[in-house]
Amino acid sequence: MQKNQENVLLFIWAVALTATLGSLYFSEVKGYVPCTLCWYQRIFMYPIVLIGLVALIQKNATIAWTTAAFSFIGGSISLYHYGIQKLSFLQENAPVCGGVSCTGQYVNYLGFITIPFMALIAFAFIFVASLVMLKQTKE
Image (cartoon, rainbow, N blue to C red; front, side, top):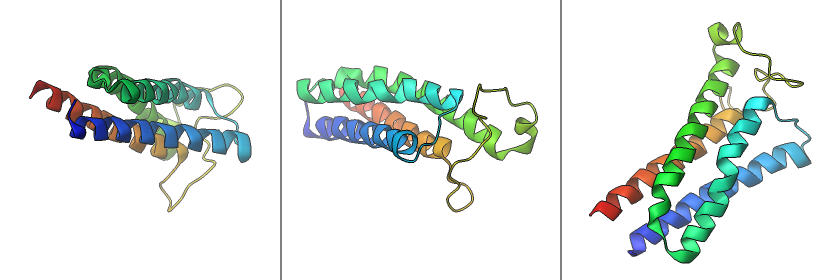
C-alpha cells in the first residue's frame, strides 16, 4: 500500500470519528434528541469509523467501495434532511419523523450550518476521499 492511500484511509477514519463524536456530543451532552432522519444518517456514519479503523490497521484500500457506498447513501439522506429544514416547499410536505420534527433546527450557525449540513459535509469528504482511493488503487 502506498503512503498516499494510507493517508486517505486515515483521513476517512478521522472525518468519520469526528462526525460520530460530534453527533454524540449533540445528543448526549447538549441533550438534543435526534429525529428519525438523524438516526438514519448515524446508521451510515458510525460503521465507517469501525470500517476505516480496521482498514487502516490492515492497510487495506479495498474498503473504498464500502465507504463510498455508505457515504453516498448517508449524504443523500443528509441532503434531503437539510432541504426539508431550509426549503419552504419541502417543509410543507415533510414527513412526520416521530417524536422530534425533522424540520427543527437545534443549531443554525451563520444562518445555514445545521446538524444535517455538518453531516452532509462529512459524508461528502468521505465520498470524495473514497473516490480518490479508488483511483489510486487502479493506477
